[in-house]
Structure formats: C-alpha cells, structure tokens
Length: 309
Ligand code: OGA
Ligand code: MN
Image 1: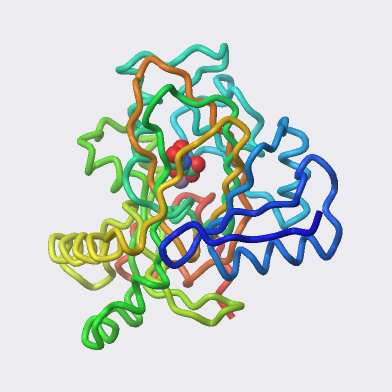
Image 2: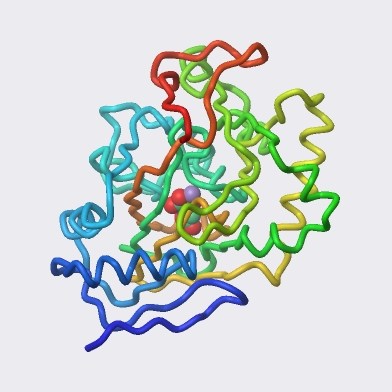
C-alpha cells in the first residue's frame, strides 16, 4: 500500500497510512517521512505494534539518537529503560506507578507545561518519537502547537522585537513555575542554563518559527521579570486554539514531532493509572554559541558548543 498523509490539525499535523514501522524502511520511505515532517511537523501512525528494538531501529533510520543521560531525577540504577529512551511513563523500574508525591513523578509533571524537547540542552532535540504502550482510561492527551503559524501571525513590531533575541533555558526554570524548587546542588549544576535563539529558521522549508519552551526563564540582556512576562505573552499567543492539535492516544499510536517547529504538553490523567509512553529522540543542531559575560558558569557536559554555521 502506498504511503498517504491526511492533515488532521488546523494548519499542521497529519495522519500517515501505509507504513509498517516494524520493518526496515526503504530510502524512499525515509525521504517521505522527512518530507512529511518538514511539511506537517507532527505525524501520527496508528496501530504500530512496536517493541523497544523496532522503535530504536525506526528512529535510527531517520538520524542520530539523543541519549537521555542526566536529564531526569531517576538515578542511573533506577532506570526502567536504556538511555536510548526518554522514559515519559509514570512507572518505576518494577513497572509500579509512582506514588503521588514521588519526586520523580513531580519533576515529570513538568511535561504538562508547553515545551520543546531538550531545549535545555546545548544541542536540542530534532524529532521526538513517542509510542504508546499503555494508556490511562481517560485524559492524558498530548497537545501540539505549531510555532511556524504562531510566528507568521505576530505583528510586524513583535517580529522585529523577537529577532535576534537569545533565551536561557533550564529544567529548573520550568519546574520553578510548578513550585518544584527543592533541587540538590548536584542537580542545580546538572541543570545549569543553556542559550537558544528565540527565532529559528527551518533548514529545509526556510520558514521562521518561535522557539519557545517553558524551560526558557530569561532573555539575555533583559531584566528577568520583564523577560518572563514577554515570554509568557508569546506562549499565550502561540498556543491559541487555531495553532493547536490535540492527540488522543490509543495503544499502538506512534506520534513524531519536530521540536524545531512545535511545542507540546501532556494533559492530566488519573494519578494511580499506568501510562507507559516511550520516547526516542533525534539530535538536532545547536542554535547559538554558548558563553558570554552574562552566562552562568557551565558544568562540562553542557559546554563545548559548535557554533551554528
Ligand atoms: C515527551 C512529552 C508528553 C506526553 O514525550 O517529550 O512531553 O503526553 N510527552 O507524555
Ligand atoms: Mn516533551
């Protein structure tokens, strides 16, 4: 069966038919998936009976995997999945649902704020590939906002204002918004801020988008409260209904999104029910050189930045 795409969101997001992701993709199919991502930014594949290995193989056929190392509050010996996966489930390594007040769960609630994956890393994510292994009885949607249309809809004055701005991103900033502030010194060092441009140009489509994320807690050269207010207004603008597609999950759904063109957030669901979602992620490109006089000292793992050509 030929591969077909059908738009399902207001101005982006498409459902893909005719691709079985458990078998290797041909070069033409890989090219079609990339072209679909460039155009729609979110692709939905239903009924994919994938295990971890086939999900990794599919991911690798599209690019270089981003490893999830040191980005959550799970200690290395508490990991349920290998570091080739970001574990966005609410399960511990014995497959038990986290207690309601478990620190790892509360940190994970940060996914319910609008964000772009790994914007807190010097080299942020390109695509995220999320597969539903088990879903709760209600709630737990994932919403996506199309940052290309959001950029286009800005007035000329705001477009001029955002041009060239650089933001500081950290998981500490996103969690601060939830009142989660009890980080250890080790965690604070690990989550030190990195810089990202506020406006991105897509390398293929050449369209501009707003690179927003709840991890953004400051704008270089701006007073913090003013920066936060400005970013909050932009997020409010960019997440209006006309820019949003809400995905209601079925087991076996695989949803891929382009973090350079979209933000997303998880929606609430009953806390005692398991939700087993496994994410593989492709590495993107650094958006800006790190450093400069107003940059906080960086731990080694977030330094060493290739300049954007
Ligand atoms: C993610 C994420 C949202 C969700 O996988 O990066 O934010 O609904 N997931 O689980
Ligand atoms: Mn995410």
